[in-house]
Image 1 (tube, helix red, strand yellow):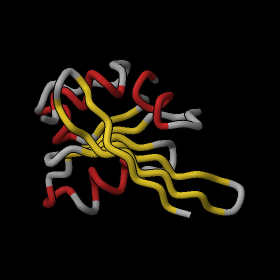
Image 2 (tube, helix red, strand yellow):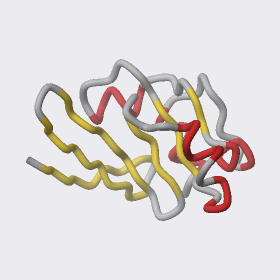
Image 3 (cartoon, one colour):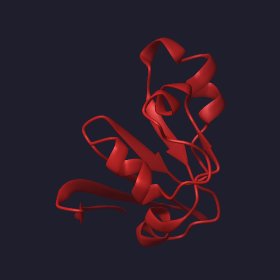
Image 4 (spheres, helix red, strand yellow):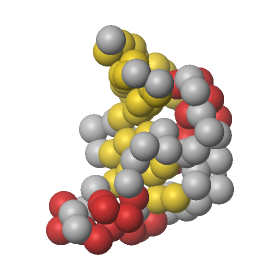
Length: 100
């Protein structure tokens, strides 16, 4: 099952996406510029093989809900995300505000 729901962060609209799969759930919160995602995101792939796409993305691990994804510290970020001031250790919420 796929569920999408809007969130508001400091007056800005973002979209939460939850994909329930066997034995796991994919979690994504996206803006028009970039996104944060659960541990399934392969930041290394984005940085290396897809570098030319300049994807603004970050990953948090150990999260099970969209709310946890917002509040969790980021484990890794893409090189392009770093150019926007997004760093590992900041919360998903802080990163999303830099993607607006």
